[in-house]
Length: 356
Ligand code: NQM
Image 1 (cartoon, rainbow, N blue to C red):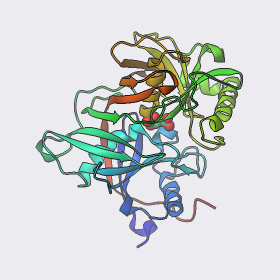
Image 2 (cartoon, protein in one colour):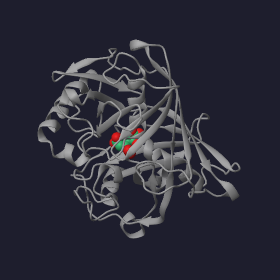
Image 3 (cartoon, helix red, strand yellow):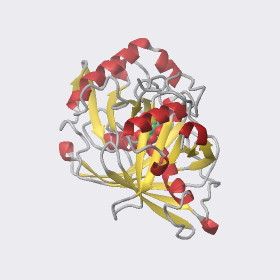
Image 4 (cartoon, rainbow, N blue to C red):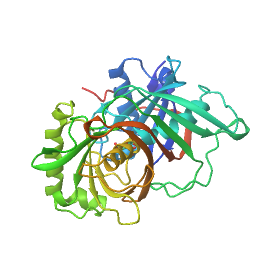
């Protein structure tokens, strides 16, 4: 069988405020290098516009989810996330993606990995990378099928759809991976936080910006970009991530006081483009930094609800923390997303090799 001649089974979905290609792992090569080469050719990388593939020319529309039945009794499916970099021949498993995670439950039901359980089907997901963690997705499944239409409006997408609740159990991992609530990198005070995504929190005022600028304004600000990158590069080793020049983590979230009745205003570098909203696990991590006293982002929040303002609206994170200071842990967190099946069928990769 030839992928170039026969095509590969693929479903495209909007997951949260991102978009990607979803595959069963059996439909892709088992060898990771071969798989990544194929994904670059499917998505149209390396090319800023990804004109010859499915990718949309932005990190948020150049994502891949690979699913398989779970080999652990604790989950129904295993979810591997791969970021395909639009303008470089790079596929990285250095992070997961909570937005694409919103499509994992529906995709698992669509492909028969999980049987419909009634009006709502809970899909227990093992997140495989960068380290193992778990999530439960509640998928609307009336009449034995996934229901995508609904009334839930989610900032980052203009159209309402059926809600998908995502719950994340807590764990033993420290929320503040450097063991400090405030560090200093490239002469700027930073809180390093990790509740599913490594994020560096920095005050807007410390970067000489207001914190409400549009993503394109921030991306055009060369001085700001180089300061943000300097912070990231110094922080990488302190977070145990080593040299982060060529990786998509850590993210940098610039925080300032809320402007629209929420808890905090954010602008997030992911890490070289600015997010049009905020990532899901990125938001959970930011919320942990906001709820804990003594960080650069500590703000007042009522009843464990952190409303994160971002460029296209706001994102609610329900979060409970245990312990305090460097001993802080997440007890549980939950968010609501939506997802939608966009296409299902075969995709043809361009021929040749993408990787040298
Ligand atoms: O943080 C973008 C997204 C993400 C990641 C990024 C995400 C998450 O919005 O869980 O969802 O930060 O690269 O898709």
